Length: 552
Ligand SMILES: [Zn+2]
Ligand SMILES: [Zn+2]
Image (cartoon, rainbow, N blue to C red; front, side, top):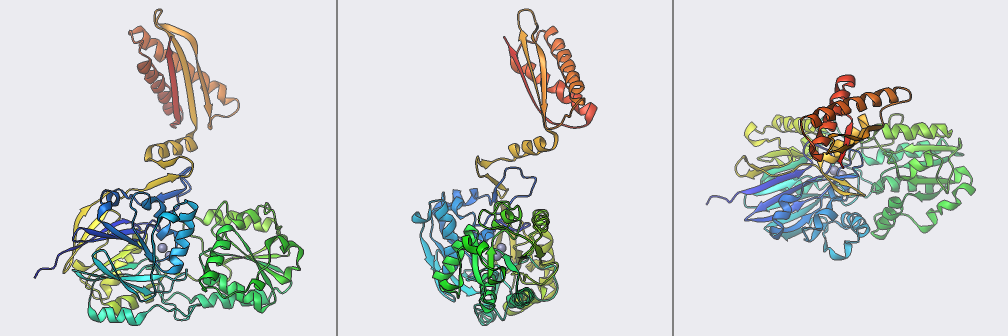
């Protein structure tokens, strides 16, 4: 009997790092994997978040049976509150994954209305049309899972974000035995993390970071140490706490998400620490520098985060000086280099010593490199492969790696957001769905491409405003034309340019009036065009022009 096709719809995460989201569909029923957000580029003025385009899912909300989360990072869970507002279905994930997702839903006052279904490592669960298996993997947040879906087309494996760390901090290793068993059973399709597909070799174990931190601490017995890392990187936090405890230092936490995540991890017994290991942040300035260590957020130079505030000297409770060593236990995410650079500069200005991953191995990536990816492909021996989670070049390199492992060209597809694929013996593109960037402006809500383009023009070229009033009977100006500008002109040149604009607009309005035009909208367009033309001809720039002509 011919097997019924299974369809995969990619809604985000292909061609970008962020807003990971895809849908698996069989017999008209849908299961969603992850609902992540992406952070904006610096020129996306006023944009706070970027979401996947959820319209395709919202139109099919009655057919969605659940959202399965691979792990708790924001690029996989950060868009949940927006999706859940329209598609109210249960969310499945590990205790840690759900705990991290719940924080954000609580902030949005939504957690009470959502059904969270906690799954254990190795658990298999019926979700909609599929049996879903949750396979433990190592990553830079505890409790991460790869997923295996039993479908009509065979087993589909989604790697989640993963690395093969054989000495993880919590001893919870990637379950390679299960992956190998699935490989023997036969895998119809593999979807796998491509973030580090350009990098040869293997990623260092998280444990190596602890070795470096121990040495850095030992070499600085009399200095205060401030370590910045991702608040969800609880294994990194664990290693800092372990080193601090060994060397007689108490730990203070700084940053709201750091405090919340440490609390969550202690409650879930995922962090080994006693109340006695910690000290209140307010007391830190009163303790000998060698007796304390601060763990804070802000390793990506985020403007509102703890480290950024400390670097500007506006930390209300703590002042950095030349007694401090700041460790940025992270690697800047592409796009954040500039902000991280500013923070590092400001820390130097305060006299602090700064150590980052360019000086010492104080960070290990959570994403598999080529060596580990080869292992995954070898263990699973998939019939078909689609690279996910990466910018376009990462997907291309991962596809090449899959072909080098023996997969034929018909069995490896590079997809982009919005692609729909049918999984059979091989892969078929079956359609396209809307998958544009959905911008969220924290104060204004949804944002279209047009206001964003206007913000770019305002930022780059400024704004010119022109006003005039017309006497329709006399067909002449009732008041003189006025022009003003913001964000471009400067000093003396101001008056000359504005006078030229006034002259151009007066001339254009005069011609229009002479030809009998006394329509307000039409004359406003005349003033607008005359201003734009003059500025374009003289300066080759196009500021935003606001014209207003009143017919009295
Ligand atoms: Zn990710
Ligand atoms: Zn991740």
